[in-house]
Length: 164
Image (cartoon, rainbow, N blue to C red; front, side, top):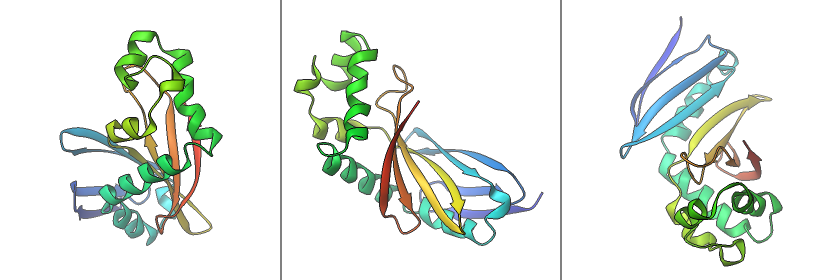
């Protein structure tokens, strides 16, 4: 096992097996569990350093992703549907608890963005370029739905997806 061991700004020491097909790292920030997943670590090579540099910008990435969600909510059907679908799958009490309203027509994206927990990160590599997803859930308790903000290694937002 060939380990890449380094220290990160927010999470302390991280060890990644450079020969692994998949690494799943549990981290803690402000008493919240954050998961970082890296697929195909065995082909990253020196790009593992890029991943660590991205992880070191975790708070900045969270801000960039939330801003992108807020700015694109009214013009991006994926983002809008991610939040709207919860009004179909959750009961009224859960909806009120999560969103503070009873209907999607009353929904306030700004309020919800401010209350989102810290996201998980999922890394991949394609054409020797790191791409990653900043993954949010409105609730760990009530929903398996995930809103993914896709970014490149320069922290440019290049898309959104809704997964479950």
